[in-house]
Image (cartoon, helix red, strand yellow):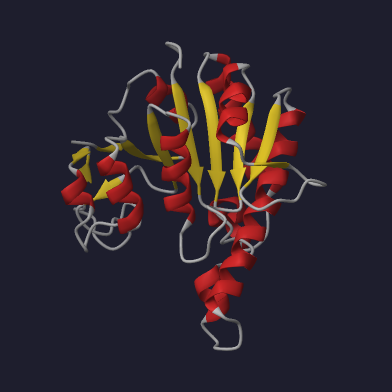
Length: 238
């Protein structure tokens, strides 16, 4: 890897739904595409992972007892592919060169995930969207994003959310909730602090991968983070 900064951005599927709570809000896709374009224009190499919760979540699908957890998780993986294709279209509409790589083979729709090919795409300035999670049930897209970030040798993983970062308590319920700008991996694993699932955090810790939690809806936030301005987000690292 050369001296260029490489970042993997993780978006939740729910964020794409907007006020509708379900499906894909085209105005949000357009906003994200603009933010990613600005980031790419600064020379940053970008990988993206998007959840599938705006369409179906594996755990929820299996909650009724009819659908098995493995099948529910496979449904969730396919939902991430739908979101990845939508994001690819949004990014291509603003002039970006994009590839979608899936952990599950579906050659008629997108490439199959191959680490070396993904790195070459990034080195050539292409944005790579990683879909279908890890390709295995029982793993979240947080874990998939962390795994992909490590595999492509990303400098950090950015979890783009609806809030500014991690708080000491729920900011929607408590007016005196304080933003935690710096946390250790051990802090992030505490039950009352929800950054990512435990598997994702443990994987990041083992590989010294910084986790940055930020508000995806603040214009210019991703570019600020790439420029090492971390004042309005939370950073998890040693």
